[in-house]
Image 1 (cartoon, rainbow, N blue to C red):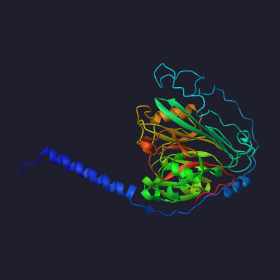
Image 2: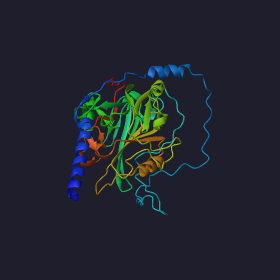
Image 3: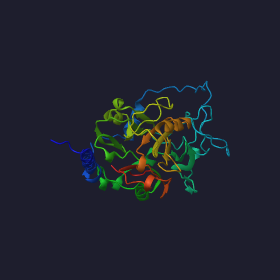
Image 4: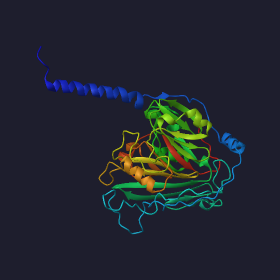
Length: 373
């Protein structure tokens, strides 16, 4: 038998690969799949009870750090930005207003997940104050800023909430499920829910596995292979390696939200990392959730895949958030999914205009914001 021409062999392999990609993408992104929540829930009330039942601990005075605080990534006003990570040169120095470095300090709180006393100077007595870059009310304080870092444009929403209920997650079309009919542009979700700051989430609907906890309800927990980030009812945040996470345990501990894209960007000591549990390490547009301390968070969006803004590597992301003083940080779905919304307008430049996604993180005003079950 005569051997087949090489071009026919190559064409056959290309067609087979194309067919495989179609078969993969249709159930994941086209065919709608309504799914039911597992139904296990956590509550602030349970956390309040556990705190009340805990033995009283006498507080000790804070001991000042023996070593100087790490250099922040912000230059003096008007200072030129040096090339990042160059041997023998100064590190990149984004502008002074983004990612404010605020080390956690002991402060009074007025209940589980409540921070009105702790950050009293951040909130108004009732009036809503809005400028081009800030939103301040009795419930939230959000400031937006942008800067250059490692040949990329970075956009930040610095966030204080008076109550953890001002930090919600929203599903595309307000429904849980997989497929195109369960996705929506972040801008549309922000406009419908009157979001003050909105960030694209972990796009849980692109996968059939992983953990999904939203607003205190467990929707899914199967085959966790990615790092997990948990926001608790008390406002604290913790990141987990896949083998260290158990959904039922963390629900019992008060898990309020859990995302499963990753990777985590800081180690348990808040230090930069060099190895990551991810296959999306090269330069890309990024969405990052950052945590300073309970009640103080930030959303970060990095423009990428353009001549003006290349996007950040995972290593560069880790170095940036570490130098900014974050306690924990977590990479969410980036690429074309990465998007931030300031009020009712896009903030930053999503790649190719962004895409419809299955979920977002959102900061909303209101003392008792209702969230979807």
